Image 1 (cartoon, rainbow, N blue to C red):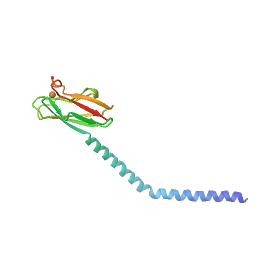
Image 2 (cartoon, protein in one colour; image 1 turned 180 degrees about the vertical axis):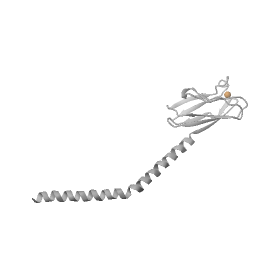
Image 3 (tube, rainbow, N blue to C red; image 1 turned 90 degrees about the horizontal axis):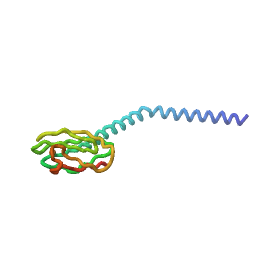
Image 4 (tube, rainbow, N blue to C red; image 1 turned 135 degrees about the vertical axis):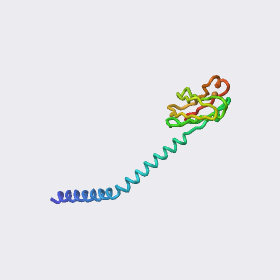
Length: 143
Ligand SMILES: [Cu+2]
């Protein structure tokens, strides 16, 4: 008889504890939810920052690129902006990453987006005429 009362008492205590825990959770549900959404929107804007940080500007002239080495990150979207600071037509080609900008004339610029799917060092060059042979080459380092 006393044993079954102990069980009943134990169940009652368990119910009370569970009820308190539920109430606490309910009390903090709304603030917690808004905190979580703050965090996720912060993460989104951080990712957008990373995307804009993934903007790489390359100047093309006769017959070289500046800079000659650009760094990208595997799996991270980057925008490569090609500015033609020279007097002829140029573009930028990264064969290993399937990247090719359109050709732009003096003073013009163009851009291309790339999300490298592998790490390594790859060459880029100008695909116009024999500009590659004249020195319009560079290195892409993907980490
Ligand atoms: Cu060129």
